[in-house]
View 1 (cartoon, rainbow, N blue to C red):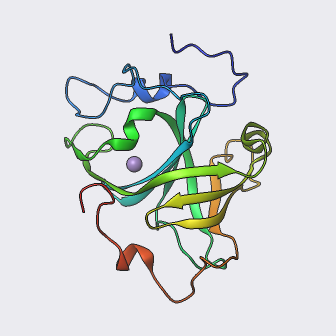
View 2: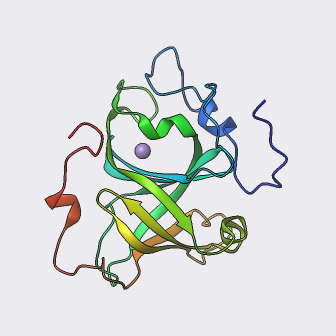
Length: 190
Ligand code: MN
């Protein structure tokens, strides 16, 4: 089954399921058969979510789920432009292909498109990174490439959900270019 003795590295899908009524939302229930395959590349996706407030959901596959952060302003290619990324509940792997409309009144009501997708490669042990609050990784997406980081902010207890997402300096960094403005289209359906 989907039970993992993972020592709390990922949250599992209980919170994801608790928040949603799958008789009302078209989102995947997480009960599908899609699992990480040994030796396969780890998936990466950003979904643009026009909920009550537009945001970008940044997701990285790890241990059979999608680790997820809500990024209100979306990613920036400028390394000095660090974007708030609020750590939210793990999502099922098949969520990464979801585009559609969540009905108003349901959790996250509004439209979802796949804004970018591809694979990611952690530079170090990502489970240790999640515990320590620092992930450094390479993205191989249609829109985002190269080296990126997610770093947890030091806040009061209870504030641990706030991270920063930012581009690290390399040949894919770009200043003075707003990728969310210039590339608004779906990476799945164009
Ligand atoms: Mn969202």
